Image 1 (tube, helix red, strand yellow):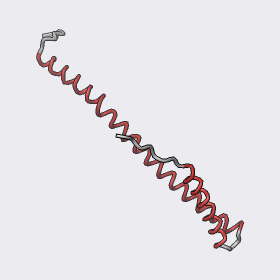
Image 2 (cartoon, one colour; image 1 turned 60 degrees about the vertical axis):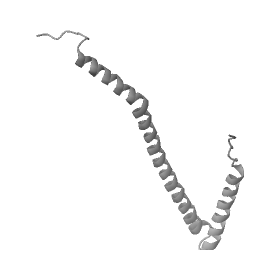
Image 3 (cartoon, helix red, strand yellow; image 1 turned 120 degrees about the vertical axis):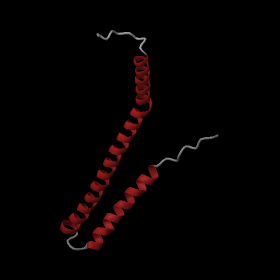
Length: 104
């Protein structure tokens, strides 16, 4: 018995409707959630790598200053690194912008 393409079969109609509903749910809910979680995961990985790079760079600068520039004057090296960090922090603080306040 060959199966012909009869669209009046209730099982085919029900499965077709279920397929359309699942496609709609996937397109409108699941896919945006997957994209959001992907962006959050990549953002977390990049943030972690940035923190590691900043800490490693700062340690390298301090070590380089101790060995080659100040040759044992650790307090002077810390003073210079602290002053540079403070200046960079003040520049970043000055460039910040006030948050926009929404009026109800």
